[in-house]
Image (cartoon, rainbow, N blue to C red; front, side):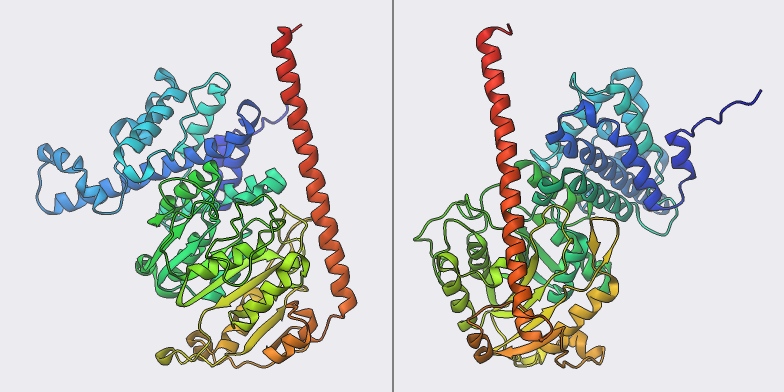
Length: 542
């Protein structure tokens, strides 16, 4: 009699996995089983906290193995070796977190069944935070709770234990775990829809900003840093172009409003080996600037689009070019970032398309002031569907405090000019709802900017700038004045009629109103739940 073939276990799938992507997919499937037994708001912290603990433990073990080899070469005998292997300074001096014995992954995996996995994990998180000041208040202690399925949690710990992070030898464990962390962040953003935009910017968008700004060295700042994706891509850019040893050439500064997202960002930087300053606590950038005296070489940000409820102070000195309206913070973000730029600082900012043409509540006058101050270097119109989390069309603003040739850098003199790039027809769909910019797209857009600016990378590649009808155009300020200081690239590159731009503005307004409607539905549901809870409490459940 024939029998049905058994479905392979996740452990078996994991052992047969040959690529990092396969490992990521299997871990995601296993972690997803816990979703129903955990508060949705804490689910990201729960899973990413486990991955982070695995990372710090693996990094500790790697350093311990290196140290043991060094001690053996130095002739240290086995009976004396343990003292050296437990010397905290040997780890922190190598930029490795100190992990107490009971927080090491091998200890947790060995004792999980006998002592209770949830308690072991909570105790491990507490121990790691206690021993590493930079992680104080960052790691989640939410594993030993009645609503957590301890059996499934134990299975997930077993899977993470079995995963061969870096086992192929082609990548260090840190890089593979970093990729797993980014993969999970992206999946959480997709699963959460609009709310996912609070902590995640699509990777191809971040890469474009980084490729254009080229943050080789200096201070990098993000006032709405989410889970730290801008900083991670900046570090990757440096590694790709200058080697891993140069990662420390940038100093990272960031701020995040949401407490849970701030924790994700702190873990993300740590897991990628980036020593960043995201402030001791989360906070509102407008009401409580955590880096008041910072002057950055690079500002990179994807602030929330079109926010209405923001901490507006009309007397704030940051509003040098006009007081932003209470109904929209787009021009508050722009001016805040300008206030953070050093003498030759540059910035790349993701904003809603409406920021390029809005005339409401004084925004047109502020935009005119920015143009006349010669702060706008480049405007990029982006393709649709790059962001799963919003249907509002987006653009990129690139600002520069100094467009002069700048001496030894021999940059081209672009004073009184703005580069317009229309990239709306670029990108490819990776599924029914999401588009990404390809490597060729990134190279063309960034290469066009560098050729226009005359950067060293453009000279090395033999790139020279020319206007390309339908794609790019370098306009002088007189042309921008003629267009009423509207900065929509389609007006300048020559391929898009004004009527189409008008249709885009209508589409953006519809998308914005749709999002407002969703917000109202969510608030209505929350209010209904609160009322029901209150009535239930008053009536004693009858």
